Each structure stands twice: as structure tokens, then as C-alpha cells.
Image (tube, rainbow, N blue to C red; front, top):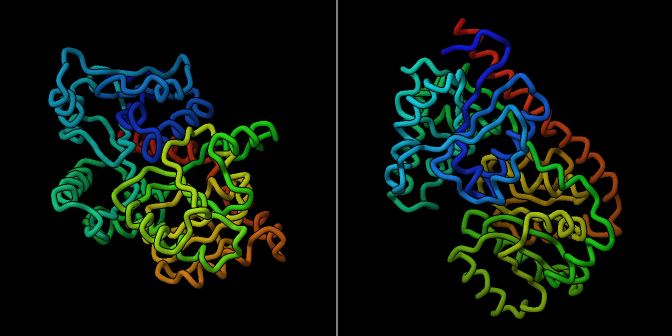
Length: 386
């Protein structure tokens, strides 16, 4: 049943919001909180297959115009998964949802025929562009979900121009129905940590005195080994701190560290509370992001907001995230990476000016601006349907 006042009811796929502490979870929580702050006329209904993690759920602001919704009488995972992909549509119609937003690129089957307008955010198509980074079954499943989304979605939000071009390359989805809306960034990274907080974080994680920083999953595609190789060419007093979830790729990195006597210069951290991250960023001298392929690259924005110069790699969309005052090198060239890092360490000529210009560039990713653009998509869809 459609409402007759100015309130718009928007449903969201909240699975990652309540279960994923990074990546897609951060995207969903940041967007929903920004919509709550900026768009009071929206009634937000967050649909999740279960309650997930209490702490993550608690990161969503409590407000009168938001509620979580869960399936009833679905106690087994297979039932909850079926509800998310198929059974939810009936619930959306019953709840008067006018627009449904699949925050992780997925939409329930049959939503187009239901009359509920649909938006899907597609973050990347790495599983199609670089299937070698995935198992065969995972690449097949992700491709199937993506093509299903292309059949159902009224609008696809691409989080970068690179992702938009990949959508066009791997599907027949109409270009005029793709909207590029960049990802917002947690405001915690702009708040300067006080000296006591910095001391606590430094002691907790045993941070070295001078270090460059990497933040991200430690997997083949993210190319952390390039930064370790570059470290060998930097002054001995410079260390590397790498923060992120481990995969089997870490063993390859550790082997290189051991074989080249870098054990005292590389600090690998796997379990870092999100609240500690800003103080870690703010004590580094440079952020390095040697990833071979990304859909956007939010750690680059986090680093710039934290006041760091950034050195990243070419080949995907990191220039979109970092802008013209970051430095970009080839993802196989550790010598150029080392030279770029050396050029922006403390005391380097032009370092402060480079950082300040980068901060101006990333203002385009302000959360409230992103939320306003997303809300405009909702309004556009409803105007077309009336």
C-alpha cells in the first residue's frame, strides 16, 4: 500500500550491516547513518536474515524513522537465505516499501514484478575482470547474482567510474540507468586523536617509531608483498605496519620477510578494533596501497582524511579515490614504489602541500553529500512511477 504523505519508505538489504565489520558492512552503516542525519522524510526499514552482531547493529543510529526487520519462523540458515533471496519480496510489499536498496549488489528474485522500485549498489566486478583471484564456484555464483541484479534493478549505483565501465563491459544493462555515486567515509578519520589516545594505541599494537602503513585484506590481489619489497630500499629506521584480515597469502609475505631479514621492520596486525584505526593512521608517515584492482579504494580516502600522503598503484580506479596529488606506480614495480614513498616521508619538500590538496579533493566523498545523491535516486524512481 502506497503512502499518501511525504514520507518515503525505503527498504535495505541489511545482512552485511549486522554481520560484516569492514567493507560492505561499513558502506551500509555509513550510508544509513548519513541518510538518517540528512533525510528525515525517509522511513528506513533494514531487512536482515538474523540479528547478527550486537555491536555492529548498535553502530546504526537509533531514530524514530528506522527499524530492523527479520524473518519470522525461519530458524535454519537455509530458510533465512531463501527468505533473503526469494521470500522477502512479499514482506516488502506488505510493509509498504516503495524503494528497495540492495547495498551489496544483490536483489531478491521477483522484485521487479512486485511494483517495488529497486536500486542495487555494485561495488566491483573483480570476479569477472580478474577471475583468477576466485575459486571457480565463487566466480560463477557472483556472476550469476550480478546478472540477476541486472535483470531486476531499476537503477544500479556504481561506486566508481571504473565499476561503471566494468558493468557496461560485462552486461547489457542500459548505461542511462547506471549512476556513479562514490562511497562515503567514516567521519572518525577526520577527528584528530589526542596524545593520550595515540600513546594507548601505540602501546597496544606495539607500533614502531617511524612507519609506513597498509590497511586492507592481505590477499594476492591487494599485493602487500610489493610494499615489503619496497621497504628494503627505504632507510633502516622506517618500518611497515600492515593491518587487515589474513588469508593464505600472508604466508608468502612472511616467507619473504624472513628470507630478507625484515622481521624487525614489518609489523603485521590482524585483530585491530575499528576505533583504534584513526590513531594508527595518524601516527604513520605515509599510506601505501599497492592493490592490483579495486572497485573504489576507501582506505585511500581514510588515509587522506587522516592527513597522510598516499602512494598507490595504477590499473583500476585508485586515481578516482585519491585524486591527482597522490602518487601512482605500476603494481609490479617495487623500485618505483620505494622512490615514491621516500619522496613523501617526513621532511620531504612539498609533502604538506600535497596532503592539503588531497584533503580538498576527498571532500567530494562527504557522507551527507553521498546520502543526498542516493536519496535523489530514490526520488527519481518514484517520480517516474507516478
